[in-house]
Length: 371
Image (cartoon, rainbow, N blue to C red; front, side):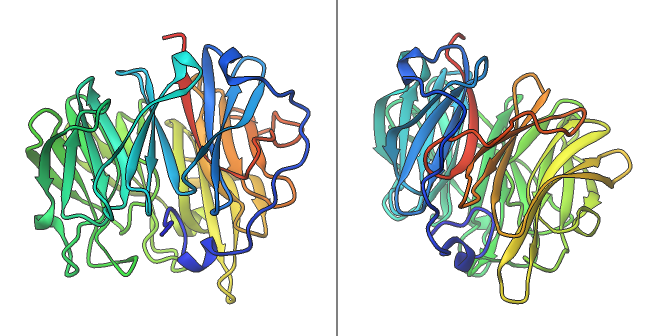
């Protein structure tokens, strides 16, 4: 089951049409070198990848068919791209950006375990979070060989599962979002579990101010902290954005609330002490929803402006480009899906129309084949 941001009913809406024409010319993936954006696209029946060069916005779309419920992760340690194939596949695919994004290996991480994310900590060690397992597995990221399993049962709720979601490595530690869900709804609390990346031993359980940390965990250098989007109960506006400081593992509390942002947190990034961006959703009485891309001030906890809005659930992921000067937005609008790019200082849109990436885009990962 696909559960990235919203209710199961919403993800089951009418399949989106393949995107329309684009002003950008197609480019064979083997010809795209240097820094690039890899875009996971899906219509929830099939999936594919697209690559966009950062220099000229040249696109190679639909170059590789993938599982329709997939996320991407690029590791600067191994210089590889990892595709986490989730519910129904339970596997990791390893791509080499330096050789035309060819698939070097693919391996199972346990049938029925519903893998959610991979955090690579060295060339021969990675952690895989799995929703439907009581353990977090430690593997060789190239071969999938099992190295260890981390028992997560101490953090489980009454269904016996901790529901670990996004995970990431930083400064010798693994940070994992422990969602603690029952029937995909939050229970009494959620947390970030911090572990030693080499031994897997728990350093600290950090309980969060709100429940269900669903947004991708991202490190914000300006804050020296991880940015955590906590959605709580969809439609209740009981969540917000919290910072987890990496020096002492303390938290900020909700530095901006869903009430102030104007909807449920879908995704969030922070550029500086005075500028952040979020996707928020508003649920209607008929369980449909709208989405908006908004900017906010982390220092004051106030919303600044609306960059984009849709009356449907059309925005899925944000990502800052490596320079920090551009905000990339995955827009799934059925009439014109694609990637939209905004200037992070002016909030003005750079793209004249969404960049066509084939199927509707879901997630964006930046890679550098010139490393």
